Length: 463
Ligand code: GLY
Ligand code: MN
Ligand code: MN
Image 1: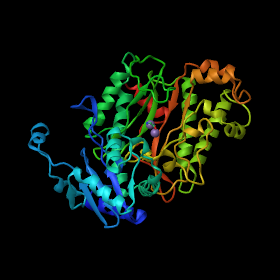
Image 2: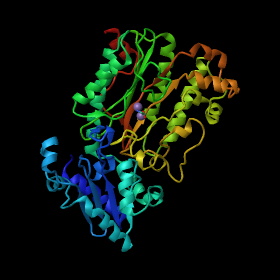
Image 3: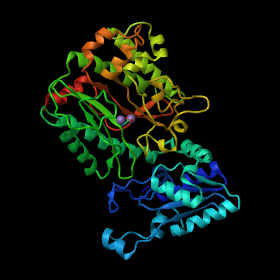
Image 4: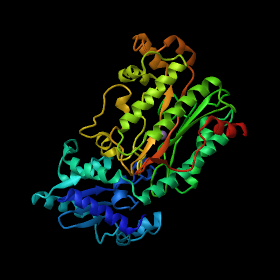
């Protein structure tokens, strides 16, 4: 945990923004996998971690904005709990670490909410994403699960997003730690992968690095020779000479701050000429986009600029043609780059996505564009000092998408379909880093992870 002051200060900021009513913050429960006692790895809710900091299942907090006090609800350990799971600090000791004096059993929550409802006090809650919390919320509010509309969540959600998107120094230090572990994970992959191994064997080594560092994964590992499948979690392929291996994985620290890095490297010692051409184009998209990330700049513009670099590069390779601006405006580049340039990152790898992707990444002035490709851009608004963003362009050759577009004659004035035939089995390349927006310019967080062709070939050549 951070110091008590961090949590009391964060709650004081929320108090100033939301002003009146009760703020209900639900921690997560243990969630069963295949029978009640065999549970998934516990992951605390990120908003609960942000304002309360306590990393145990079964906790709830209520911030009474009118009385300016916070209550923590939870169950004290019984002798049975101690026998099976060991001694735990008392709830009072835990609450004190977060600057909370009032501790109550969860059985009191329903009555407190009922009384608040009766007296007309607003009850602010967040959109629940776990079934257990949906059930509890439905019972506490006396509203059926289907009726848990989150229209009334919006003022609280907006206040939280506005506060938590701007990272404090203590958070940046945690993210630097996450990225130091993540850098070790990527180096391990580059130093481990050999012809004849399975993707699973490399994945196991990489996962081990995250666990050994005292944290875990920020999201399930993508490590695949089929990088053209964007969220590919299959790890059964055997690595073959000439293939590319795309690894998109990151650690979360013991305090749950995330790293999210992608590197793509050849299974052979060197890239082929064809691979190197596309790799260097993606690297140009990535490095130019990082340099363009500045306070006041719309992230949507950074995305569109990356798309223009893609089109110019693909024209040089003879895979696209026509006017670059027109191709990007029409969305022709999205055949090769169907996802967004990046997203905010923090306690969640997609920061606060549970609160609503559009509320995090868009505003009344900057709205999501429904065009294929752009519609997958999670964040379009202006960058601000203290934002931490991923920058993760890619170029993919997705045979099914190429075939579908070609059969419809889609964008045939911009795409050289006959020449694409030779790239059907190319796969995909993505390069991703995490970037802090500064008062002036930006900073790539974490240690440098080999990224240029020369850096990667130096490692691959030595194994
Ligand atoms: N790791 C998933 C992503 O890059 O968003
Ligand atoms: Mn990623
Ligand atoms: Mn990402």
